[in-house]
Image 1: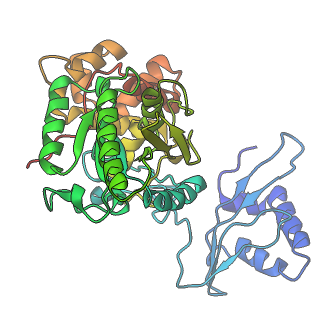
Image 2: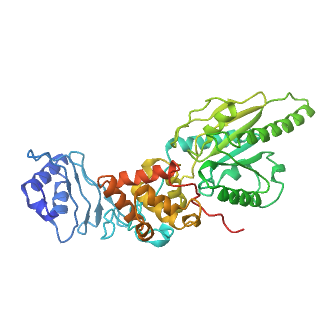
Image 3: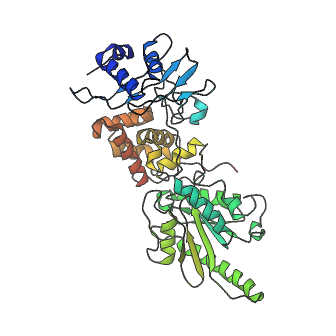
Amino acid sequence: MRLKNTKTIINSSYGKSIIRGMAFAAKGGASRSITNSFTSSKRSTNFVRLAATNNNHRFAMMTMMSSSSSRGQKTTTAAVGKGMPVPVPDNEELPFSRSAHNPWGENDERFLGNDEDKRGGGFNAKSVRLVQWYPGHIARAERLLRDQLKNVDCVVEVRDLRIPLATSHPDVAAWVGSSRDNSNNNANNSSSGKLHITVLNRSDMVDEQERAKWVSYFKHKMKERHVIVTDAKSGRGVEQVKKIALSVAKEVNEKRIQKGLLARPVRTAVVGYPNVGKSALINRLVGKKACASAPRPGVTRDLRWVRVSEEIDLLDSPGVLPPRMSDQDAANRLAMANDIGEASYKASEVAARLFEEMKMLPSWRREKGNIGNVLMKRYKMSAKEVEEMNGDMFIEKIALSTCGGDFERAGAKVLNDFRGGFLGKFCLEVTPAR
């Protein structure tokens, strides 16, 4: 059954049966407002979605968006058998307001609309979903983590070297209690007494030259911290983290003994965004699988203390995020790197943006490991295609050539290739000017 417009629906026997059904469900008193909403075509705008079962014409749900000038109210969603639309005062916006360029509406926070400043520039898609992800367990974990950090001696902040700025939590410095990064050169002697170590993990996925630039940048910017590059999977750089933690343990226990207290293991908290490699780092430090670890965000949901040795206790914590990610450039990079949940974004949109961002990187044209050449070989495209395509065209080409026209499948393919290192070794962010 194909109905061309709202008026056709209303005037059809099917539409009338729905109206009667809703009036019956509302038990009479509210039926007039429903009928008026549907029949006053001059004063109201309606969008009806019908779910029918073949020839039985049984309708499961009707979604109605209506504005009734006669009553001075706006109505939102109504379901058959579940009562009336919910009235909204005139001074409040509907959750959806349809427009020509965005069928979901400019007020729907899942989309950025056409504003260039909201997109952060550099991406040509007509509408991009807002990336937001804040599962319930994160809020609880953050509260518990802040309490535990009061009792630790050392904080190891793990970042993803592919996106070291995007995986920098804005509140970590405040939780640790240290001074601002470049405010003084001896923040380790602050009142908190905590040592702050920044670990740049996944070094195996970034070119050596870029890796060196980031280490130099962070050592200059954060002179009070130790900056260590690691690959938790292979164990590269992990011993250096352990060595620093042991030095803290020695210092802590010397002070305790001077006060007549017994020596104890140094308490070290491992914090960072989801899926940056915190649990993998702990497993390497312990020498066995002490914490659940998987290549997806949200695996660790509870805080847990792990004994590394007689000298070191480690606190494994769930990945923590800001409640709202206002920087959508950073949020999209978190999605590209698989550092936030898949439910928060559309793979096709994020993959299209990934292509656009790769084209703006210096490594796009570098002599060794040229990203453009890798894409040409990986997806069997010509140099002209790769150079002239935008993100949408790139995903469309892959969808039609290898994914049966499925854009989401094509987007997932590109994202998985990037996450697996098949598109080359590079960082999605450029070191800022000093």
